[in-house]
Length: 78
Image 1 (cartoon, rainbow, N blue to C red):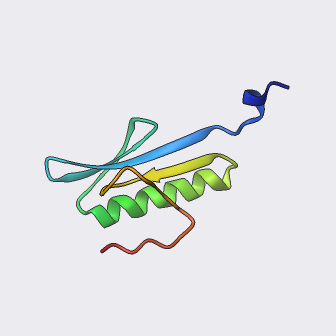
Image 2: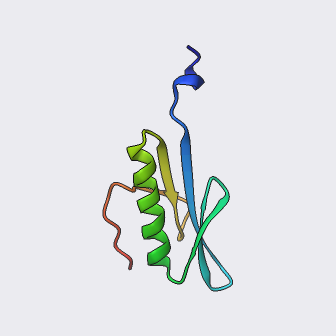
């Protein structure tokens, strides 16, 4: 079997702020709009945990910075 065939599909969730609304995308496709950063990040984490439960790799990226956040740790909105 080719190595790429055995790799589970991955999902990338990104949280961005656009015109005062927090947006979540999954693999660069609209996933949802949220009024607060905390709501958007929680939604992205919940979706990432769901994907991980299905055997898929999942990452969450949220400002500040471009670093992947662990969806296995509880989120605290500062």
